[in-house]
Length: 418
Image (cartoon, rainbow, N blue to C red):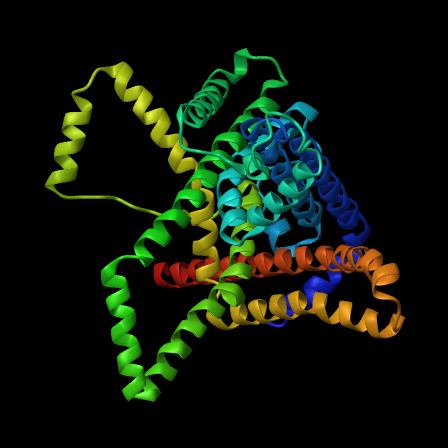
């Protein structure tokens, strides 16, 4: 169980300089993409937001690269790694390796972007993009209305058409890829990022409006009033209610965040492993009736539906496999992993406070307003490779438990046969 900590330190000692280089490359790519988006966003919100997916892709590329750098130093991964097209093997031709990395990108974009939005990283990028865009807007321009236009993405014909065109073009490129030029996978990755990014952004915008609308309903206000009346009479009820709300909120940040990162690592590593599959076989007369009616459709129609359905399932199957693997690793080891991740996250704040105490008192405007961002970035650059090593070590532990279960099952089967 404590081998996760030891493995983390061994991975960091073996690969830390390369991990740092990839992290800095991802940070630089994100910065340049946001600056380019801000330049275009100063004149058109849609143009700026069409470039913003590149910022997230830069982060995703750096994370995928860091995970792949560590794979050769992971003992359980090396034992379970299989050959074939899904394995990103250095001995294969460059074209085959590029195709394999492209496959990893495609299956990672949708869950990574959803994770990026759920944990407010998308909001941080939008804040940086908005600030940079406002700095490039000429307020004396006759066409200037308000600074909010740089993120003013509405559900209209332009946004819907952009999403549909990006999704359709990405589907066509994937379908006819053998007949297309070798550079088209890069376009496919960008188009995938565009339609996912715009869709998530629109959902986030309108979900906030829906939440405000629900909060203003009379029934919700009535429930809030009843709660206030009950807690006014029975104070312990209010304490329990508040404690449950606090526990639920804290659980999301302390538990779900590290497990989400572990699942994302599983998506990357799962492309090179015989990962556990999630079996689902629906049954019933309604299902059988639907299958019969579907089979009666023209062959061209059923083939298109099968392609689209397989494409959709293929996006989420690696994530499902990773979640199954994590679930079967055990509660106690995963609890230790979550604790180690939380300590590492807190180390960023502790390191900043320690650096402030070590540097000592200086003028706020002349010193700290210029140094605090640089100091914070330096601490993150040191800790980020260690965090990736912890995630890789946690996933390698899950793989080790999988191999132990397989060996135990083989021994049991052999004994029963004998």
